[in-house]
Image (cartoon, rainbow, N blue to C red):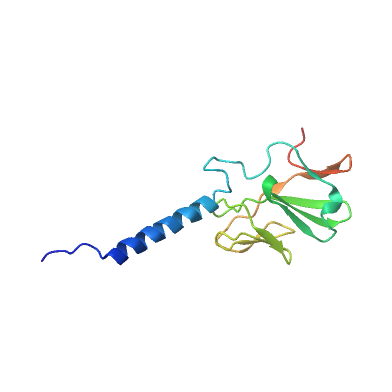
Length: 141
């Protein structure tokens, strides 16, 4: 019994799938180019005016990799915006849900807890404070 080489279509389909898988991995590295970037700030980060986060609302600071929720006037909670499943930076916040478009994980905007997997670990808390009329996240200097 002789084996035949794979059909051209089979080879092309495999190449296309491999390329798409590679794009998925690139999308999930958080744009870090393969380098290991900490999931939360390691130094203070100035996010701007505290009023940019409305009372009862949540704002994603994608480039700074943090999400800030304003629970009440002067009361904030912040979480790392790197999904705990595969390291993608989360993509959006809607209806008090922080969403990761890489694999569909969702997190509670008030607690960081997982609402939908595949992630199983909550988003890590990040210290947040107002200082000199600015919203600051990360450890104290």
